[in-house]
Image 1 (spheres, helix red, strand yellow):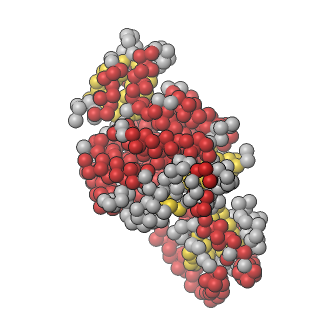
Image 2 (cartoon, helix red, strand yellow):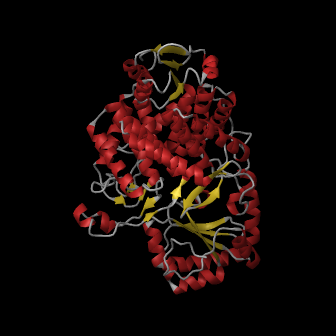
Length: 586
């Protein structure tokens, strides 16, 4: 079975990733050729049209290997374990799924050599390989040292991440590192938060220059809006031309937060460009939802807009990926608050409701993607974690308790199927897909950081201690080895900051009261990523108000609590300064 996104010119009979394909390799005692591709990937298409469409290559593959093909977006769990440094990833495996060797794009002659060499190597050394693999298994099972999240180690994590970001910052062109250069949106968010919390002028400069350089560089599409995935050059001038829902969601948050902090027009212009692109190309206006990606087409994107209109747009993958839809919906909710445009909130809520209706069951959690109306592949941590975070954002934006209840429902599945008592969440359900490297459970830092963030917010919104303990244990698990991620551990730093110094904001008043709505509007559009907003009706939420000790009578009032100190505010016009500058004004 060949995946639908592959070119028909190929003559290799690719098999799906499943138990039957692995059994075939084991029965024949021959290696597996695993190809990891993506619909938007330019070099994947090139390899399909050349290497994999060559008859000599096909004969060797069919005779000496079991060829298996997976899509990177649809199976992130496989990509996580087998990626060789980019896409395509070309991976040679034992029949049990252990890596022999591999690479990324491989032209015909090199592939011919590798096919012959790997086949011979496996047959000669398979007994020795099995012993080495068994030894590796024992080493992998060792648990890292754990630290207490309340110790001084926690502050050192923040300091180290800040230092990493500063040391990798490109003072000339903005961004981090050299070519190829990726946006590193999470590092940008972390740097901006350091300016907010500690008044670091340098981190604000890092954020502003990076966003300005990207927004005026080739990585941003000045004709149709939106960002390409990354730049092949240090100065952002020559992009890799695919556009991803995930990247544009994260960058949208970056530019919205820059508007909140600086109010500068350049950030507002780029924000509108992202939104216009997503609205036009990635949003399913009829049903709700955001499409996964748009193909790279270098010739198309080099044209000016009038010339582009004469050509067919690069293909859009209309798959609805749940984690990316959660990210973009959260970004749209922020856009609605910051830009004061209700239509973004409406579409975000429609998307969330649509995804939940089609892809969620309490037994299996939420599925990874929706394609042509059908849902596929349930239980991944990335989908559960990002959807919980999104549902919390929906609750804070609307004060509709159904979203809070749904978020809590997701946590039951996560704790039952993904939680490790030693701390942290596995990336897939325990006991699912136990062949190949999938038999080794993985705890990804990014998704665990999002999960910890979500559980912390649930603790503050419900008062339930179990959420705090789960978040604390998750953060502690990664404290000993977060540094190996470098600036890619920035989301972990954001979760640590939320643990250390959250700001609880309670608005007590009826949603029918204009003053209540003004309070909420000002709070939602004010920058402070560590704020947790809860709106409480004096009648409906009387039990929660009794628990918090707030009065139920009188005019709508906001209560802000930070580091053990609380302050009541009766004038909505004064709330912005307090939320953005903290209670003590420092």
